[in-house]
Length: 92
Image (cartoon, rainbow, N blue to C red; front, side):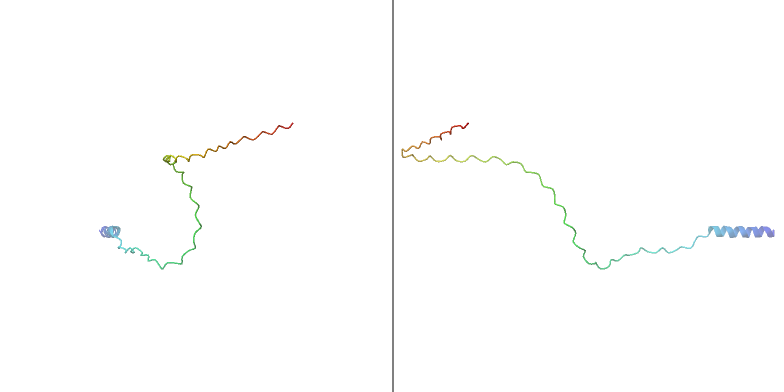
């Protein structure tokens, strides 16, 4: 009977130890990051590349025909005739 009590006590100790819950642990809260003051301005960047040339536009419409000119003045009867130049003889 003494052994039965000892075995029962050991079994109870193991049973209670196995069922024991771990103590709750406090989880740390989220870290809040506060930005500091702004630093000095950096140097200016390099000049960018020139963009592509755009497409050529469509040809415009033809304009309207102009007004007919006025009639010229009547001549005084003098006629000027211009004779063609005489061709030079070919040299051989």
